Image (tube, rainbow, N blue to C red; front, side, top):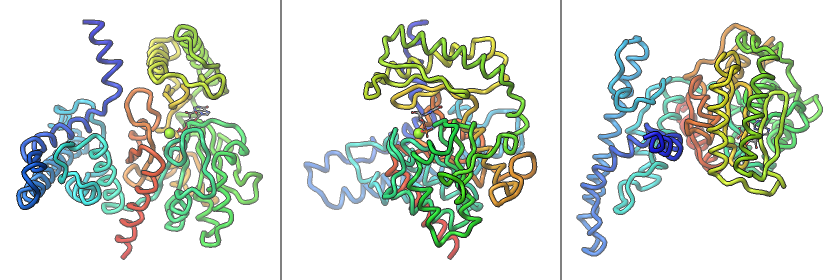
Length: 434
Ligand code: IMP
Ligand code: MG
């Protein structure tokens, strides 16, 4: 049993999003019953159009039912009903929702784009459902309220893994458009550097474009911050600083809870993580070297072009996470951490993106970005007016997943999808204005 359990856990649970899998399962039933695979050899025509219409109607109905179930779940959340909602019983891992999700409308939008109900051999997929959820989420943040803060992961979301945001990236004009519409932007990346030049190297395309823009007001330009190392280094855009970024001293933005993380606890936690990473490098014979920083420790490929197998990266994350959870500093729970598979490397960071996004919410909420004092207590941008866009959402070792605790999220698979999402968002914001 133990072995079976471990196999299930290691190969399945952390590689699945239970909610998406569940919706996919619901959609599989009408797919089986109404898609017409025989149409291929029985000729096209009327029957296929009817089948497509029928599949569309059934998929829409199912998504409307899920939408209503989410509404009921939100009522449970708000009224603090002690019993689990029906959705919680069906999908035990389901978390909080900050907005309702117009899934039926989102399905109709994605069906027009992806022809989901016209398919006869390929059932509604994981990616179909993920994109329907993204559409529903951005419909919600623009329709039921106003988007005030958009935060973005770096690698894979804004640029390809390990690359930089070059001046010709199609994402740049879209980010400028958001700033022009008075949406605040935080780049919340795990990449942890202590100096502005390193972030400039990764993000120069965007930073130069903001500096050169004649359309943005100084206040709009200041509505851009970089939160690096998940929640460890804050830089604000500043046209007069070297590399266009001014480091903001921690005293100005640490939340009271973050201020209570002691250096001794941080070092103790990173020491345990470092030992566990070293063990993995040895036992899995990884082509990797250790990288220790003041707020993170990781393993990176060595020589730099070496590739650590995906299985080894995942094994390392799970080993390090378990080791930390069971360690003395981990059990004390005084300092939160995030162990994740970065695609080519593994890192353990102090804090996680829920803290990073929360700092942005406070920074802009208390007018820090508009020249005020920033940080501290005061007001903050609420979760339902915040959208975090990232690529890492599978529960174990996925750093963007944590952002779900503090805001709404969109899960993209590559920078191209980010561009599409931003176009969809601009469209919805435009419609709202008109
Ligand atoms: P993100 O996708 O923007 O969150 O960046 C994650 C990637 O940043 C990791 O996969 C690493 O390659 C890189 N990185 C560089 N420094 C750090 C660090 O201190 N902690 C975590 N990741 C880092
Ligand atoms: Mg990423």
